[in-house]
Length: 400
Image (cartoon, rainbow, N blue to C red; front, side, top):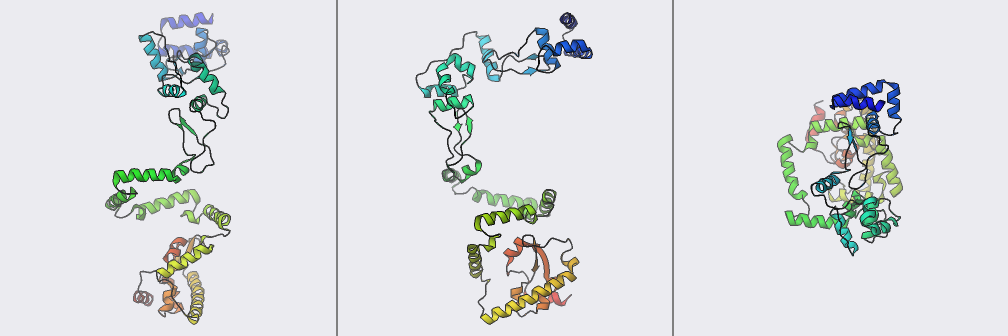
C-alpha cells in the first residue's frame, strides 16, 4: 500500500520540490515513517526511502572496482562509481564497451611500474580478479596494515619498515605508491640531515652562486622593510605592541621569558642537561663570557686593592640604588614590571664600573634618573656599554 502511494504521488511530478513535500508527508505519519525507517538500519530518512522504494537492502557498489559509493542527497540517488578514476573508466567502457584487460608481467618491477600508472586500482577485489598471486603474496606481509603498502613492500622486496636515515631510530611513514616511504621520520631529521644540507647547498650554489640563499634575499628584504616601515619590522611600534598583545593573551605576561612556563622549562632543561639551573652557571659558559669581555676590553686589569675598592663601591651602589628605586618607583617602574633573575632587572644607564673608574660618587650613580627597568637579556648583553658620556651623565644629574 505504501509503495503504491509513493509511486502514484511521484508519478505526477518528479521535481525535487515534490520529493521534498512527499518526505514531509511521510515523516508526519508515524506508521509510514516507521515502516521506511525499519527497512534498512543506515543512512538518513531520505536515503532509507530510496532503499524502500527500490527494494534494496544493501548499499550499491562501484560498477568498476566494487568499492563503496557515496549518496548524493540533492539527486536522490547513489553515485555509480567510487571515484573520478572509476568514473572515467566507466565512461570509456560505455563509449567503447570492451572488456578491460590488464597485461601479464614476469618481473616484480614490471608490476610496480604498471601499478604506478594508475591503470588498476589497488584493492582486494581488483587484485584478486587480475593479479591473484600478487594479492596472496602481499597479504602474507604482517609488519604493515594497509594493502597498498603491503603490495609496495612485496614488489620492492622490503622486509621491514625503513628506519630514518638521520636519527637511525624512528621508523618512516609511507607517502604514496609511486614515491614509497619517506627517507626521514620527521621534518627535524630531514632538516638536520647532512645529505639534505649538502644537496640544498649545491642547488643554491648552482642557482644563485652562494652557499646560503639568505645572502641574496636578506638585502632585498631589508630594503623592502625600510621602504615600508622605516626600519626592520621588529623595531616598529606596531609590531612590538602586537607581540605584547599575543604574549599577554597566551601567557599573561608581556614577554615569553617572563612566563612561568619558560622559567620551568628552562630550569628543567639546564638541570637535566648540565646539572645547573641557569646557562651562566655552566663553567664553560662562564669562561667563554669572561674571554669575550676581555677581547672587547670590557674587563679591566686591576690590582687587588682596586678590586677590593670596587667591591665596596658596588655594595654601596646596590644599597643606595634599592633605596632610590623604592622612593621613586613611580618614575622608574610605573608599569610595575616584575623584577627577577629571568624577568626584568634594575639597570644603571651609566654603568657602575665606569662610575667607579671615573670617580663618580655612589650617590650620583644611584640617582633615580640613572636607573631604568629593562629585560634581563638586554641587561646581560649591555655589560659596561652606554651611549652617555661622563659629561652628559653629570649634566643630567646636576639639572635635576
